[in-house]
Structure formats: C-alpha cells, structure tokens
Length: 194
Image (tube, rainbow, N blue to C red; front, side, top):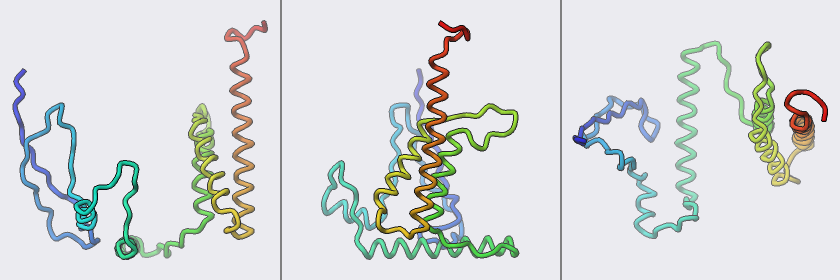
C-alpha cells in the first residue's frame, strides 16, 4: 500500500480568545502532515501557568494539578467576565429575556433528579416504549446520596428536606423497576408456568 503523507490546514474559527475577548480574525495554523493510522495523538500547548509548573516539577501520575489562589481567582474572574458577555449578547438578541437567576443548591438536586428519572423511563412520549437505563439511574441516585452525606450539617432545612424527599422518591421508583425486572426474569419465556 502506498502511504502518501497528505497535509491539511488547521484554522482557528473560535470567535473568542482564551481571555474572552472577541477575536478580530481567525488565523490559519501552519500546515502539518496528516497523521498515519499509528499516529493518533494530538498535542495542544499548555496554558502558560501550567507550562511553567510542568518545567519546575513533573507531576505524579495519580496527582491532581494544584493551582494557586491567584490562578484560581484569575480563572474565576475570566469566567465571570465571559458569562456576563454571553448574557449581554443573549439580552441583545432577545430584549424580552429576563436576567439569569443565580444557581442554587436546589438546581443541583433537580439536575440529578431529572437525570435519574429520564434513565428510569420518565419523559417517554405517548405510544413509545420506555427506555430504561437502570445503571445510569443508580449512578444518579448514588451521587445524590453522596451529596447528602458530604453536605450533612451544611444545608438549610428546606434543602435537606428536598434532598431527602428526592432520594426517597427515586429509590422507591428504582425498587419498583428492579422488582419488575426480577419478576420478568423469573417467568418462563413462553409464558407457561413450570
């Protein structure tokens, strides 16, 4: 087989820079030979702070990168600025749109609740068979239980009650589904009793 090296051009078409500033114009990146079947590794330059840290001391495999308080503050400020810019653009495109509300603990609970319910077949359109992903449902329930354990003593009474009620409801639904699965597994395939 003739393995001819082909080239391609990478063009950065992102509209914003890493700092959240609007880019003036996308610039093409230098041409490089295309990767062969054995070369599937893509490398990206590290952000300057990480690059400097990597030169100082190589991290262990299982070690998570450590960021300074200043790096975290800078990252948070850039994130907040970018979020405000997105909100401003959305309001310009949709003048009747209200301001985005702040994220609260209840939103986290609702997110896991919806994920678990969808995994257990909720939200299925009428006339369609429910698709149940019991493992994903269990994972969402377990994450909520871990959240309950890790936030014990730090929640308001309302948040604690909401989390407890959501966990109770999801666990009951999970039990109903797993019991139905167990019953159907015990029935003979042809529908006759043994």
